[in-house]
Image (cartoon, rainbow, N blue to C red):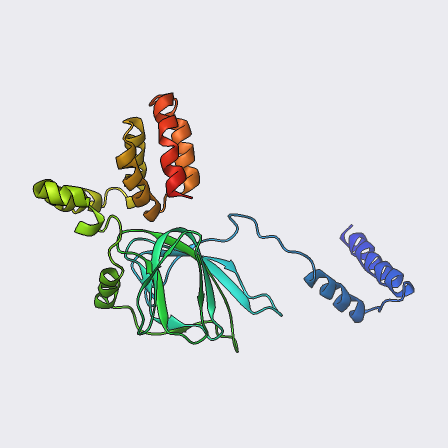
Length: 287
């Protein structure tokens, strides 16, 4: 029976080659090579979940970051790309790209800095171009997470030149030159000026206890704390506090779509008027 099946398979292959030859195409090994070439020209779809994110290597990153390699070089193209999710405080080492790199920020707020330059804040929706050979680093801010997609081309088989790690001092200098980040615990980004001028003690408690202690506790991420706080401000119908916390939520990676869904959901639990009254604030914040 096995012998019969093998004979049928051989006959099928020979018949296919004969038919292809009659149509004017090559036969034998040339026909197999032609079919292989045709297969390489087919569209390939990689389904969601077929690629597995991995932890960023410690020799090239500081802090916690997850890398999801979305694009792998597929000749003749030399383009590759990955999505990198940085936890607060995480960043790349100093590095450069021989043909440059494009970053597309997909969530949160981060920093990018070139050697000898000032830090630049980058937010969801921003597109960053890094010129060829420029020494730089990028990652999350000290208090917010950030995810970006990095796309680059290789030259002579190399897409990145890794260098030394970004020291805590260099990273700390980035925090100070950025002018403060919402949720970072500094006076300028926490207690409002009116509070500092009229009630200094309340401002001190706001900075040191609320934002310096509660918001820094590791039990919840900054993003989760923002979701809880924004939901509370909507339920309590506090538009002024909602305005400042929505900006903080945006810095912490909360998206416009999530806020819209939150308001819709809360309409059934916190009251329809509260949800309707809250609509104007996120419209202003995310415009």
